[in-house]
Length: 211
Ligand SMILES: C[S@@+](CC[C@H](N)C(=O)[O-])C[C@H]1O[C@@H](n2cnc3c(N)ncnc32)[C@H](O)[C@@H]1O
Image (cartoon, rainbow, N blue to C red):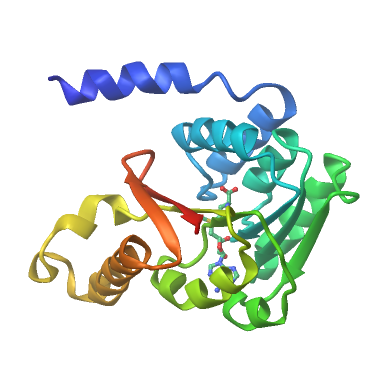
């Protein structure tokens, strides 16, 4: 099978979920080198939101608000989203204003590790997309916030493909994140609280449901 052609083919189909102002925001974010969710991720997310019909979404890692706005557009939920980098917080604020989203969005400013313990749930859909080395640390608090049937989606779990390499094949500076992501994958696939599947969508995603 020609994997490159297959990927191009799939990507061309994945452009469907985006149009209008969100497509413009995506272009602006990419032009500014802001790491936002890929089209395949948008497509999966839209389908999951339609299936789950969440009331309350939690996002860890806002960046400039693209995925939060995408989730708002594709659900009736409110979105609580966390970002700790001031320039991104400012950009997200502007974008939430520009899209008239403040009646359904709450932007929490600060480090997710510090903010999560103070949050009250429940959240029936959680999107984890912040520091990849911190996913395992977020997990206990995330589980606390998820009622039975809640969905946890985590992005970039393949670490650009390096997660499959032996730790010795990974650059020394990337070894900690590599080890931690493997531990996260092990935790979500072996958790008694979650049913998890790992999906080769975008840069790899885990999709978990709370038992
Ligand atoms: C991949 S980007 C998020 C992209 C966004 N979800 C989207 O697709 O539009 C990750 C963001 O998480 C933020 N971040 C990283 N570690 C964080 C932490 N511990 N607490 C809060 N935000 C964090 C980064 O500053 C960055 O803007």
